[in-house]
Amino acid sequence: MPGQAGLTGSVKITIAGSGAMGCRFGAALFAAGHEVLLLDGWAEHVAAINADGLRVTDETGTRVLPVPAALLPAADHPADGSPADGFSAADQPDLVIVFTKATATAAVAAAAAGAIGPDTLVLTLQNGLDNIEALLAHVPAARLLAGTTTLATELVGPGHIRALGSGDTAFGPVPGEASAGEASAGGPGAEGTERVRAALSGAGLSVRVAPNALELVWAKVAFNCVMNTLCSIASIPVSALARYDGFDPLASSILDEIAAVARAEGVTVDTAAALATMKAQFDPSASGSHLASMLQDLMNSRRTEIAHLNGAVAARAARHGLAAPANTLIARLIGLLEATWPDRVNALPAD
Image 1 (cartoon, rainbow, N blue to C red):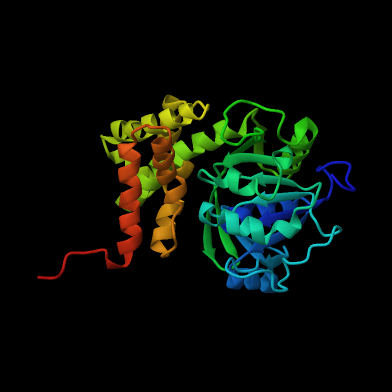
Image 2: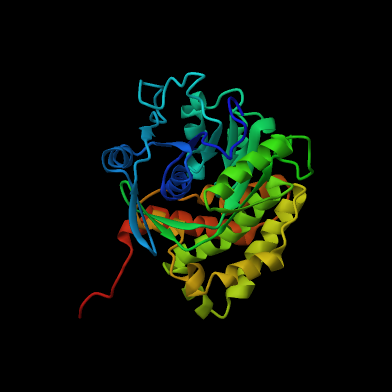
C-alpha cells in the first residue's frame, strides 16, 4: 500500500456508508490507531459525529470517539464541493470499506470514486447480491475483496450506535469474473489480503480469510433471505422464530431454491449448515433479541434490501430457467409491507 509497510501500522481507511455497521468498524479501527474517515449521505448523522463525536454503546456503557466524518454528495447530483469531493492523491486511503445498503451501492460507489486511488484496496462487507458487480465499475477485481460479517449493530440515532455482542467477519478475493464461482487470479493477492486481515484483527475484530468471496456472499444471502424476511413479515425478534414448529420446512423451501440458483452460477451453498447457523441465532445470548435490519428499515419507513436478496434470487433463477416460487412470494410480501406499513393495524378497535 502506498507509503506503508503494511496495514498493521496507522494507515488511512475510509468507510463508505457509515450507518450502524460502518460506524462500528470505523470506531474499532479508529480506536486501534488507524486514520479513519466516515463517509455517509445522511447530513444529520455526519453533523452529529463531527460536533459531538461518534457515540458507541455496548455492554460496558457508552464511549465517545472523535472520528471525523464527511458528507457524500447526493446521488441525484454531481460533486458539489462537499468534503467527500476532490480527493487528491495524498488524500486517497489505503483501504475503502463499503457498508452502504445494497440499494445504494452504485450511487455511493460513484460518489466516493474520488477516494479510490490506483493503489487503494476496496472491501465490501455488504448484504445481498449485485454489490460486487456495482463496485467493479469503479475498482478492478485485482483490488477488490468481498465478504460478510455477523456483528449485530443498531443505529440509535444520529451519531450514535449500539454494538450488540460479538460476531465473525470473513472475506476473500473476488474472482476475475464476478458471475463465476471458480477461483481466479483476481483479488489483491496474498500480501494485500493479509494486510487487510491484520488491520481488522488488530482492531479487535474476529476475522478470517476464505479462498473465494462468492461462497461467503451467497451463504450470507441465504441467511438473510430467511431470517431477515421472516422476522420482518411477522414483526418479531430473531428468538421468536424458535416458537414456530414449521420453521425448518419453511426455511428449507427458501434455501433449496437459493442453492439451485447459486449452483447454476458455480457456487455451492450448504443448506444444512445455513439452517444450523440460523437456529443458533435463536439463543437470546446470541442475536435472539435483535431486530432484523430489514424489520428496522420497515419500522423507520426506509427502503429495504429485498430486491438484492429474495428478489435478486428470483431474478437470477428466471435467467437460468429455474423456478423460485418461495423467494418470489417472500419478495412480494416484503414489497407489500413496504407499501402499506404506515397503515398496518396494531390493535383491535375498542368495542
